Image 1 (cartoon, rainbow, N blue to C red):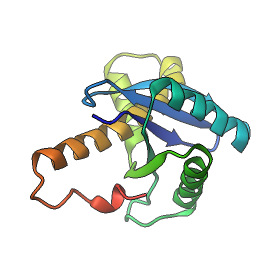
Image 2: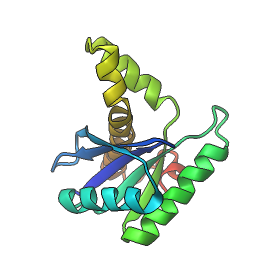
Image 3: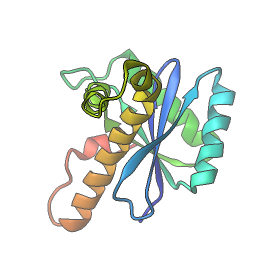
Image 4: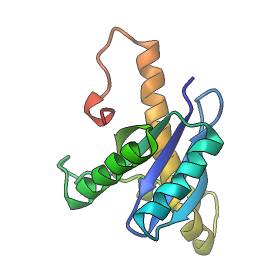
Length: 155
């Protein structure tokens, strides 16, 4: 199984998630507070090396109609710079509503608002990575079928 890291890239923070050795379960790891591009890339490089990640899955914030707005374009630019600087493969997954999903999940767990605020970005990253892991597993189980929205998996 491939080792992967998932990212929820925001303008102030980057949520980071990793997967277990079997590639079945994604979990939140940390949140990188953004300062500048070189520092952001260095922080992610350290995590990628620690986790021996071969691929990075980046949440792509599409508009509700599926189009790519300014934030999605900024995210793709960040993904391109990440790929060029660190030499890792970058794939995108539609991240619409992942923050809402993460927030609701943490509310159901009974986490306080303060705790949810601290964990929201890495929880969203875990949802993004889990989507990619699930799609990848489905494709391996059903190789004859066309992929599930393969456009979201291409860099």
